[in-house]
Image (cartoon, rainbow, N blue to C red):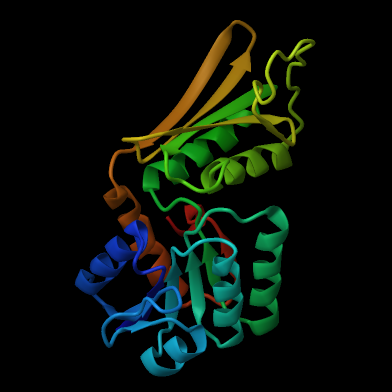
Length: 250
């Protein structure tokens, strides 16, 4: 049995993850890490060191908020506990700090800004399509209450695409309203929509000579992320290195 805890256990994703882990074969859910002063019940803790000392998790699935998430991940690694990071809001430098901590402590981690299998495949297919197109834009849509923009998935997709080749983003001579063209991440345009009633949606649009390729993924329920969470947790139990995304774990 792999002992697994959840950081951000009171949140929508954290509470669903805790329920999923508690039902999963080969996994023992040992408790949750929550914000200071909000612990309720014997299996909830509001301080990382106490959580690790008493609950003894081997893995912490993190759906807390950034930047607290980064402190939790780094603190877990220093104590030999493997984090599975599902929190968004990480910048490129933040990811590199987690990677370096893994190398220093020889403790594994999985950085997974999106755990939906379809979303992982969307990014993989976009990698393949990028070889054949010179321009790309990303449109992502999340619930109105999401605190960060762009989403972690959009950032991860844009970084992967811009790291693979140089894209030419069409210039606009007259921008009539700030932000009309969205963000520019290494030549990849990223547009963030925030609306009530949605969960997580992303479309990667490639433009070519007389054609448009659209690669889209839609999550209609948070349940869509749980299969990837379990894949990451089971893989993390044996990891001694940093894994960027669950694509290589599929």
